[in-house]
Image 1 (tube, rainbow, N blue to C red):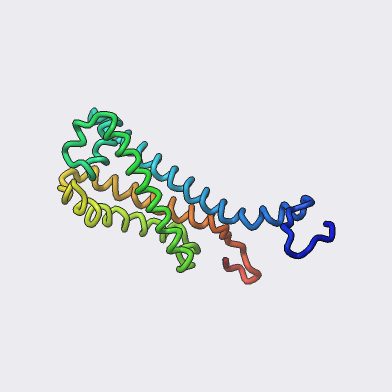
Image 2 (cartoon, rainbow, N blue to C red):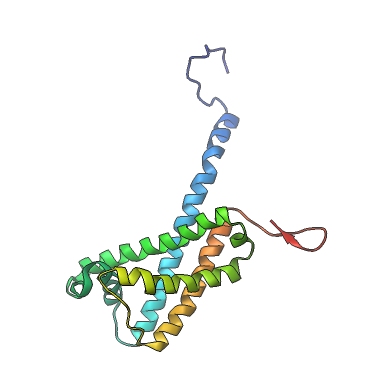
Length: 189
C-alpha cells in the first residue's frame, strides 16, 4: 500500500486484505443462511407430512394452507381461496423460522442443547407440539383445539419430535459444533 495520510480512506489492495474483510462477514452470513435453510426444511417437511396425511381424507394442499391461515381469519379462511392459502403458507414458514430460531438462540446460551441434538431435539419437538396446541392456537382465531382425532394427534406428536431434532441439528451445524473423540475416548465440544 502507498503511504497515505492517516485520514485517507483505505480500500483492500490485494487478495489478502479482501479475504480478511470478507471473513469477518462470513460467520454471520453462514448463520443466517443456516437458520433460513433449517426453517425452509422444517416448513417443507411439515407441509409434506400434512399433505400426505390429509390426502387420504381428500383434503387438498390449498385447504391445508387455509387451515393455517385460520389462525388469523378464523373460519373465513375457507372462503378466501388462494389468497388465504398464500397467507397460510407465509404464516407456516414464519412459524417454522421461529421454531428453528428459538432453538438456535437458546443453544447459544445453553451449550448442552448442542451436545446431544437427538435426545434434546426430540424433547424440544414434543414441547413444540404442546406449546402450539395449548398456547398458540388458543390465542389465535382458531381457539382451543378439539383433540378429537387421536390418530392425527399421535402422528403429529411424532413428527414434531422429529422437527425438534431438525431444529437441534440446524443449530449444531450452523454454530459449527462437532464432536471429536478425546484421548480418553469421550466426546467433547
